[in-house]
Image 1 (cartoon, rainbow, N blue to C red):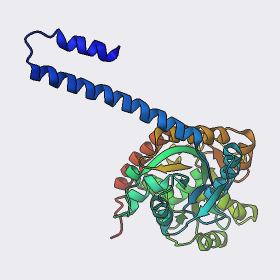
Image 2: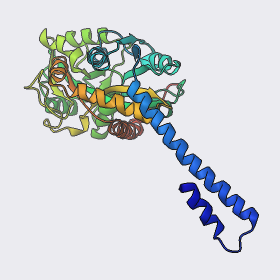
Image 3: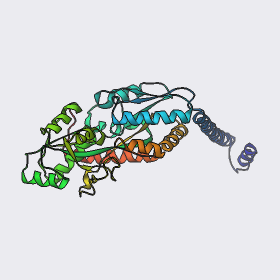
Image 4: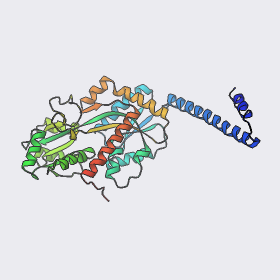
Length: 347
């Protein structure tokens, strides 16, 4: 019927040459074929998404084993394996601040390999690295967030700082006397921007590894440290450091008496270390959404939320669109903060 209708329409056009009629038929035929092809491709994509996975799924985690993202990666791998009926294994590829793992992921030609990483790989790295071996914005496809690694601000027990207010007042009274250190990623930009805008003189001390900075915090050589709550907690529990605030939007069950930075009066220090799943450019939308739906279902499970909360993380279910919008928001914020602190990527 469709082709018959098309033929009639062409025939009743007045004052048209045979050549014009032929071109009209050809163009309309191409349009119809294009529509049919689109339907077929969409149907094929849906079939692929419904059939996936049909073998082992690998999660490339560009972090060392035992870190906060590694913990949540293994938690989600276990639950997704149950949902998918296939093994889901975590492959740690640490090094070069995550770039080795991301490069390894992008170098695979396997639709059963996904990237499980903290948001810094697409928000911080384009700023801190003058030249990346890949374009994270174009080559990585956000699938779904899973959790927030709660960041916190802590002071050494060797000093008298007991609150964010106390820290700010001390720095104003004695500029240049105190120092601070942080994990890589968000803290250098967020805290650095806050200090610059507030005209606070707090010296930044850089470290290559986490162990020495925690030791120096406990012994009083570092006055303030900003990093993941899970990493700081052993120092707090040992009586070597005290928490001033958590940088999340709400209080954390692990330390319910510790205020958020917003409650303490410093909302500019809000930081969310978002972790999630990424695919590669060219991933079918249907497959991306199928995975996102399953991941979100796991993140919404009360048992998973409880396990994450016990180690200083907060579950964050969400869609691919929500994840992409969040990452874009973070990119813009970090770009502005980089200008504020006049950050220059090393040559």
